[in-house]
Amino acid sequence: MRVIYNMSVFRVDSSDKQIFINNTRLMGIQSCSYDTQKEFDDIRPIGQLDVTDRILKSNQTTNLALDFMLNDGGQSDPFFDFQTSGVLSIESFNFKVRDLVGETFLSGAYMTSYSIRGAVGELVKGNVGYQCDVFDFNSTGNLSYDDQSNDSFNAYQPQDISVLTNFNEGVSGLCIQSFDLSLSLDREPKNRMGLRTPQTRYPSIPSQGDLKFSIIKNKVTGVDLSSLVLEKGSVTIKLNTDQSNEKEIAINNCSLISVSESHNLDENATLDFSYTFSIENSGITFT
Image (cartoon, rainbow, N blue to C red; front, side, top):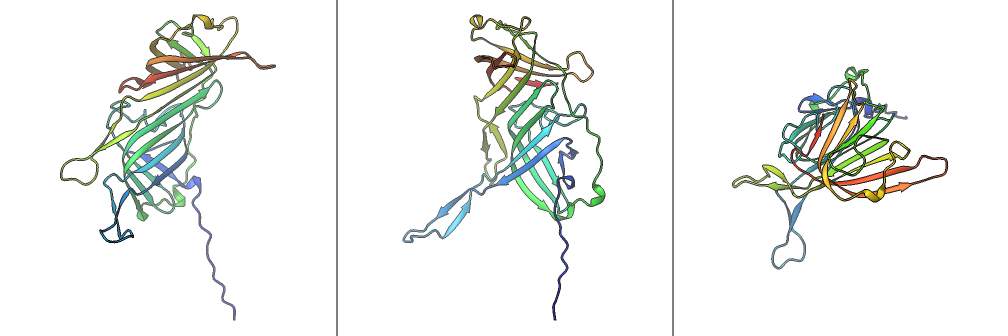
């Protein structure tokens, strides 16, 4: 006699996953990943060679990373569309990741990294990283196949990008081809007397960020490299200027650290500018 067991094949597809921040569903998420690694101390009693116990430390964290695509309208940026206190604040967020299996809670999430990049005629994409205090899984909050939907999403695709500065380096008012903004923050956990787990995570300062953009060199936008000097000021990246979907990224305390000019066969000559900036609480705005 032969016994045959029928087992259904079950898997979680990307279409069966929804991500929420403070109970608001995020649109345009391209990937989501999180990992946790226990921090502990080995306990070895006097007179023994082996470790008998391992005691967890108070600072247990989960790292969350989100890749996103900027929306033409609505809330799609997992940080700037929801923060209210600035980049260096101790404001935390709560995330939920729901799929067909269950619901994962990631609470006490503090921003530790952010990047966004775009080019003329291309989609604007970014990444944001969080350090979370609490990681929990609940099998009762799962989605069903009925939760699948055909969501309408208008990806942001700028047709023109320009740069404005308030210091003399010869690039203000020029049209640029691409930009790349990135920053990272280390967080220091702070405990309170009588409590085992950290109650907040303060950013370590000073912290630095980077801004890069590229310009096509021609008769209109040619820049005399010999006149460039190291100064400090603000840089504003404007996308789709004077249009209904105009967006603007303003960065303070920028210093030009490198300029490169390149020529390749059958391609446009380009100038690549690289800046560094000190991160301040209100030093970066995204409108």
